[in-house]
Length: 184
Image (cartoon, rainbow, N blue to C red; front, side):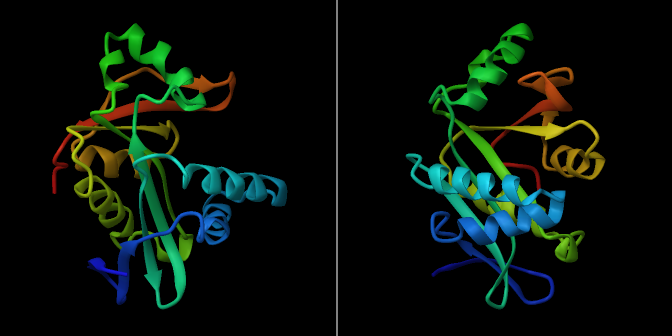
């Protein structure tokens, strides 16, 4: 397992086999968002499915043997459920060109609450994006997540849309995009 980056508290960021780590990743997301047991199992299954996506790039932050955070992405342009939801929002602002294989879709980024505010999110995102030849990165972020939006803005992301609901269900989200390489 090649080491990609070092971060505070002797945590190591390295490649992550998302299929193998799907349960641990769901545990991290559950801790970060307070998911129900049913939602946690659903996320585990989604992560396992996403692990089979062509071109997936996944990184994990490890505190010893424990997964403290993870991030993964894959090339856009596959007409997934997420893309079908965001395409009309991007088209409405003349930004539908963001959904091409030259765009990296930053799918998930989660850090366990005990490991937050230590630079792990930034290190995970940059590690994933640096491993991709894509010229742009696209993500969705919860409107009320001010800390995440600040991080993304610091990395060079700009808001591309106004707030919207996925499938008509709260919370509200924004789409943000950045050109590669990300700002450091």
